[in-house]
Length: 357
Image 1 (cartoon, helix red, strand yellow):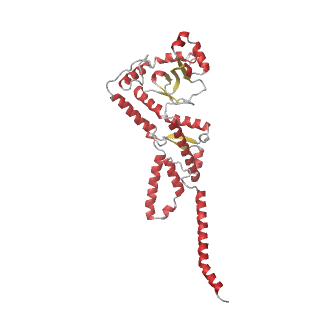
Image 2 (image 1 turned 30 degrees about the horizontal axis):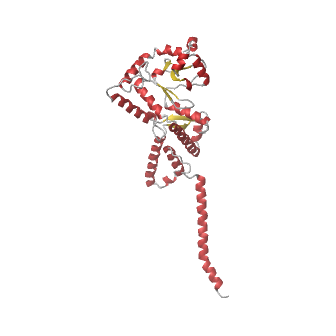
Image 3 (image 1 turned 60 degrees about the horizontal axis):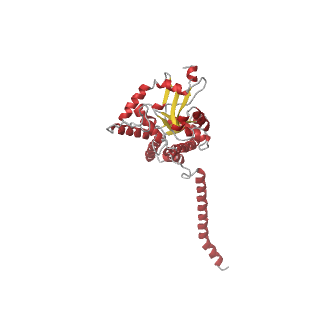
């Protein structure tokens, strides 16, 4: 679908007002649902800070929305464990499959990156805006999320944006309307805002409407996604990599995969398979004890730690440490044998020296 020059050259405000008329049916339905559940989620048209909210004389709707939103939040962003998994992809995957030791080390590094990304999500408290967005989805059926390069994630309710899609559901155009303080704008934008306001408006109000227009031009793309978890992971990894907080992974070598909900086939599933495998090996060892000797215990322990998402730095001994300890034990054993030999030979030598010639 191609845009006409009128659609592109229109002001953001004009485009918003034009597209808003197609949103009214969905917005009216969302407001009706909000009144019966949580009235402040999608407020009525013309609502101000001094306006009164409708009070539903029952709490069934609000309890239902909060309960469902909480369950969805736990499903999408489970606490204390990553909701995604980084997997080796492309040619690097084939190379790793041919070298088990390298594969284990790669899994260790990727597991560490997963923990770093999860730490950023916890630090930025992303669960709070996501929980708010889930309530909007349950009540109004639509919500817009923006993850800026600096600052917290923003939630835009249905009455603050308009959107246009093609027949396949792909996003073509978005216009966002925000009412913010003029003092929060950059200096240049403040001058433009004050230039379009009368002296009476400047005295009576300190807010202004800011419109953001996002649209697609020929041969140019923009990153807008209908998903939630995967875009957050990709954006955080990209920004953390630029800041040097995580290693810069070569393009096409690592692919993030969501492992919650229906797609819960991640490290927790690997751990269950490892447990079943080791249990079968233990049963086989009762028939043939040599079966246990075929296992690489160090690699097995490392894989189990990666499945748990545990940082093994300083916890599991490396091969160099094990070899150094083994060499030290051999040296101590040799020294003890020499001491025992010296103790057993010393009396005989002393007797020989004390015998008369």
